[in-house]
Length: 326
Length: 300
Image (cartoon, rainbow over all chains, first blue to last red; front, side, top):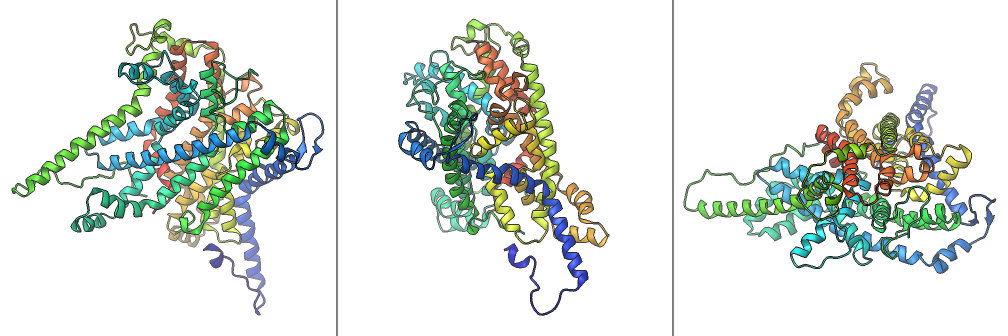
């Protein structure tokens, strides 16, 4: 890749002429100049806080008294004594598996659908895309209203059809499916990415498959899918990383549904109802900012970091095509 | 970059062949048309009905909003005025505009040169820098939030203001840098070389030659950043929530319901008022936006 064709080290016999050396020094200064905003940002907003998080994970610190070194105490506390850790991890993994799968499947489905639509394409495309734009807090409040047992239209119509009327955000076994529905509602981004990928599939391949007598499923299985699989892989990996950070919707849904709205100091039951929407990012907030247990919050933050980076490294593998250039 | 929005998708030629052999094929095409469009209508209902319900409820009376009625008996347009006049609402608007406006400008200005360097300059450690950008892009904000909060609160005493949200934007945003780099790679090198022959330095080349060509990409990342700031909930919750004068719409909207108890109509009116600018902006800049989303994916 770039490294090989980059600066060629001239450590071989010939001495570097001063003019060339000056030019090189100028080039290095120029590169540094262009990169400088981000180099500072990377240091101040990534490296420093990351190291600091590692430091605090070995400290007892409540934000007021001086930090005290406690060794692995925070780590053992989070893994074996903190009653809500495994529940939060389980919920996070549930959301990662179900949400990402359904979002990718529906995103691909809607993307395929859009490539087949012949009339009213502009209308349909905008309709499918619009929910993605709804600000998460607003969208979550809207869904809390739509799914509100008793007054919400969804249960009303389900009742009319003689179907069960779940408690959605108020029922521990329905709250995560309700959040998933909200996430599937906003698949506009995936639709556009898949649509672009699908339109790039060479039509000759479809024609060849048709000549060979391939049906619609076989055409999808042997022509479409192999062509778009890098995009599917990309959607899955970025989806996993995004869902690891799942925070706003879970917290807003819990607060609105429980009838206790946060804001100024009022505390609601985290993960309402019954811990079912409790996720790792909320754990960092709750431990660090509501229980002033900085050390344990940093342990959870590092666990979150490790999982996210493991998935990021999948993207960075050369074969994923993420870093290709020119 | 192909323009996804205007790419025609016509596989079957309508009409045309009149031979007997073509008839079954035509019937199949007609059936397919019906099937595809029925599915599309059902899907459109799933995506649009929530907006319709929210809107209709927002113009209902307080009493009716507590029922599961579909159509308003009286159209209470005054609900929008009432939502607007909620204490704090105007402040949240102003703060959100400041955060999103300043954040967008600072992000674009600081990210463009970085993206250009990563796309065009050859230097040792370039791939490492790119990997660092991607890692930062994928970093959950919760991972670094505790030291960052302590930094803003204890060293700089700036929590309760918008500064902790805005200042970091002046140091480049990983997602913006990455997207811009992807786009800049598609601009042929010859343009840069021609500019150099004309005696342009790197800065001049970037400003006079590359930026005008990268306008659609810059517009897309600016929109993304504006939306990001507009929608941000975690940042305001951490850094500015202690002072109601520094709340943003996303944060304030949540507290709206407590001010209006069970008034779903006013809450829905406020919800739509928060959604509206984003949606209006989208209609004005649809093309740039869709192109930007396409850029986030890799080309196969």
